[in-house]
Length: 253
Image 1 (cartoon, rainbow, N blue to C red):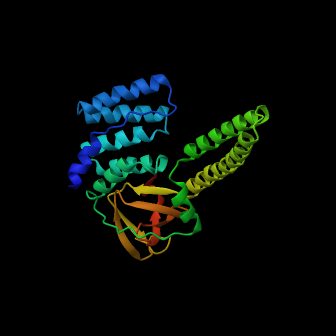
Image 2 (cartoon, one colour):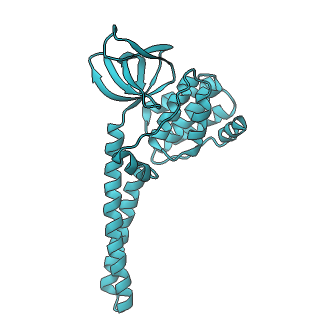
Image 3 (cartoon, one colour):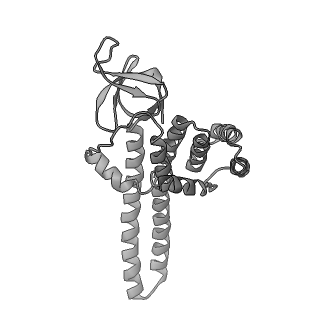
């Protein structure tokens, strides 16, 4: 059933663009056509070239992850699904494909979620991206301006009352959206994640080679970076285990 779901998702290769230049979009469409012809290695090269030009397209990362999966490179596939979700946390296709990809990785780490206040707020606000909240703030400002202009033109007291309420709501929504955009931007900056790209890594109890090994990790495992000390990183796993690994074995998402 999971495999069926996965390949159904692959059939929905996205070609939507937000604000990319027209020539970039044309190139993206061309690489998508290469993917659909099942020339996956060629498609990977094309997507990586486009990434150097524009690095904020969740659709690009999603399609690149799909192409890597098709070649059997599950580590890179997981990496680019994670990058997709960093830009668009609500993209269900990427979540489904990432979960399926993890079944092909060596480490099976159970997700145990622990939330602080910031995490709880993020769970609510992450329904929209930072750009999404910025758009809502912009639209509320436009609505405020329209209500303000019509308020002074209108002579109907009932309409003026409705417009006044509309202006208040616009201000509240606008300020709330600006707060949400700022919060999500700061949350993302402070939440640094990475994937291990080395075959085997020892997670140490302390930031030194002679320290006892807590766990052996493998490529494709996601870590949350908590602290940096010289050549070492203090990381947390999805199951909330904490330890130290060498910084040259990871790639930040």
